[in-house]
Every structure is written in C-alpha cells, then in structure tokens.
Length: 133
Image 1 (cartoon, rainbow, N blue to C red):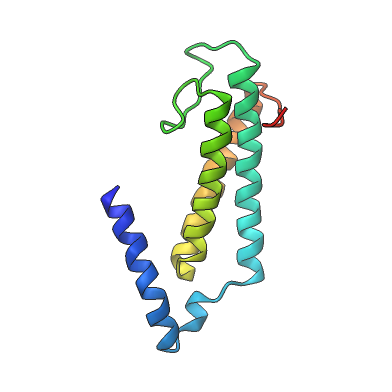
Image 2 (image 1 turned 30 degrees about the vertical axis):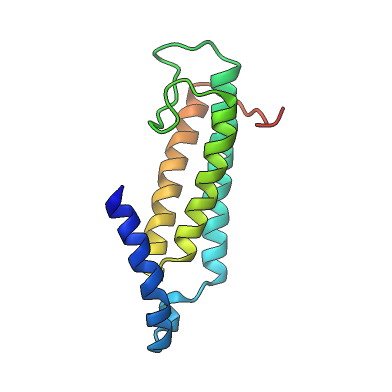
C-alpha cells in the first residue's frame, strides 16, 4: 500500500515537471484514451451488475462467491454500491494522472481482468441486475 501511495505521489509531481520540459505528448489525453477508459468503465459496470445478481439473487455457496478480496466472498449490496463506484473513480483519476505508457498498461490490465470476470460470470449463468433496484 505504501508503494502504491508513493508511486501516485511521484506521478503527481512528475506530471507538471514533464509538461514544463516539453514532453506534453507523454501526458496528452487522446480520443483513444477516452474510448479505452470508457471500455474499462463499461466492463466494470457490467461486472458490478453481475456481482449484484449473484450476491443478492443466487444461493450463496463455496462455488458462488465474489473473487475480489477487497469486497469479500459475500459482500452486502451497500458494500458493492460503495466500493465499486469508488474504484471506478479511483481508476479514472489514476489513469488521467499517469503518463501514456503507464496509462495504457493500467487500462489494458483492467480491461483484461474485467473481460475475464464478465466471461466467467456469463458461463456460470449470471445475469445483470441494476445496482439500485
């Protein structure tokens, strides 16, 4: 956790310095960045809706559980509806504050993980439930 905080702090101080030294292209946010972030956030939202479905509307068992250790195996709806949106905001802040190479890795990693989670949930027969219903 300390390493993550230190990395974010270093990026926060490095961004203005890099921009002043003429390396704006490294920090420029493009339409592709927007599309990639929208894809990542959309996949997180689908996973969120699937998680609400199987934690609230399916029998809880050792085979049916949330894999995210932060949320816990059987999170409450309130916990889901608090931590997942916070994670979405945190991810967006982190990628916006990151230089292009780190931004691309973070976005690709989230997309990969979320595609895998959504696919696994679909294979298990998990449907979508709106988090606020």
